[in-house]
Image (cartoon, rainbow, N blue to C red):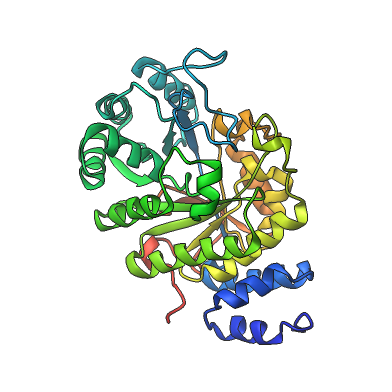
Length: 383
């Protein structure tokens, strides 16, 4: 393969499976050869996951949009007396999932919420426990590091105690990757000073992994961060993964400026930037088993193209996503499983339905011996 001019040393590292440095990552963000970046990321994707593309038949449950954080990049959060503010009861949350259960292949829940000023941890726990007791067969992924930090602070419990109770009393099997934004004190101090710090977010992930609770990780990019801060964010995630091996997947979230305070001065990212960031993330996060092209935020066409830029996961059916559509996401609020399978097959890949821990539930008439079937079988490049 012909390396992009000036990047021959990085291509050699990638082909040999040698870990890229921070300096390599910064250089890649200044590379204008998008096709080469995609080709390099695709090599790593194929090395790690073959031609499998994972998805799940899932349901998002956003319990409330009343939130004390009020981040400048968020269009979801409300004050209690704002128009459009809402609070789900247990019965309403159960009704959302029961509606989604009309799909017999529904496998998992994704429960995230606002940081409600008066709801206690016991209140949140009670709703999730009710969901687990009502739908015990569904895999439970719930809450971000920001929410877990909030629960610990408002309850007086430690992060470990909060996570343990969610696991033991409400069936929590994984935590969501949101809330990481950019793991920079400078960025968080300006955009989201009222929620978990970078160190607190990382501490929640570390503690969850120690308890056997897997988690995802994400990056919200395209606002006030520098390209160097994007790389530093990836480096912090990679270092923690070296320590715990507990991250399942990485998700790139492009900032959606519509209806946000920050949107008055920041434009939406370009397709070029979205694909570049996806590819570089795959190259830098060599110890992450999966990289997700989250169609809700990227749109379906961009997510499909991203399968050629390092992504091996396209998320799931979602069923009535709220948070990102409040920020102006133009994607559908849900996709059918048949549509997701069609998207994956059009990209020449093998669709594989999985649970929240990437255990394959079924494929579509294609042998999958070339790809791992369990998380522990997924190879990571040794260093």
